Image (tube, rainbow, N blue to C red):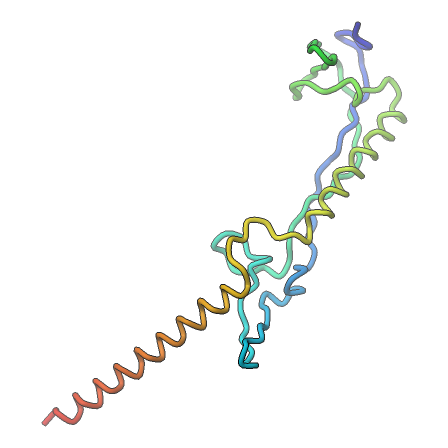
Length: 169
């Protein structure tokens, strides 16, 4: 048996998302990292911790914080599953009975709990890299290798140019 019926006005507890930015935990907002190579030399590389896709590093990472929010709604649908009753209202598919309340104060308390749970999950993720398929060490090796190859090509072309200058009458 359902706790509420169609046309009942109830308070819906939800979290409202707000975008937040914090300095990158890898580069601390500098957009680059200094790497010490095996020979003691230092190279600076772009930070991939705060870069997104093909975009350059931004110096910050974005996460979403939730704040508790309540909304007075009128139930217009009721759905029964094997485990629970779900309620629908304008602008929403279905919500669980645990997020609907007759009293606004109860809904506000539940909304705060939902927001705190979500925010804790986000904080746990904030210092983790996601989908970085290459390590910092690989990055340094790759770009250093490109420099070595470019320097060899430069030396070769300078030598060819020197020979061409000698042969020119």
